[in-house]
Length: 162
Image (cartoon, one colour):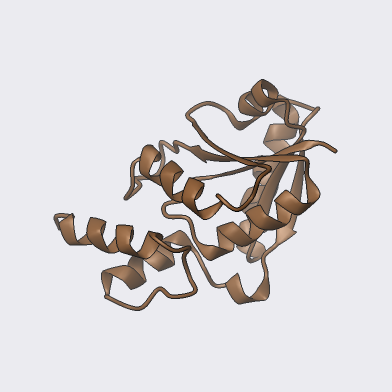
């Protein structure tokens, strides 16, 4: 069975992310959940904090390894011997972007395949940006994020300067 990577920014991890990770863990021998530094984004949480939240959220999955990287995804795949990139899709807009990324990754390394998993219907509307916005308005995040994430998010937003 091949190894897989679930890459992302995970700022913060949501139950939608966790759903894709859990499903990938049932299909692949080992799943590397990798927090990537994205220079085009200004994350709320540092990489180390996002990694810690993912470690807590995936602690029940014996075949999941949480890591971080600031390089190219295909280079990371080569380093860990992963043959598959797993990406979750919520909407057509996700597909357009992720399809372009999959083609570029294939161009960079023809030995790495991208597999798309459709999000579960209960998470189709969920995104990290939506969670941050809701938290900023004081809305309840129950069922949207793994345990511990809501508290971290509220503390961070309370300490953030406008």
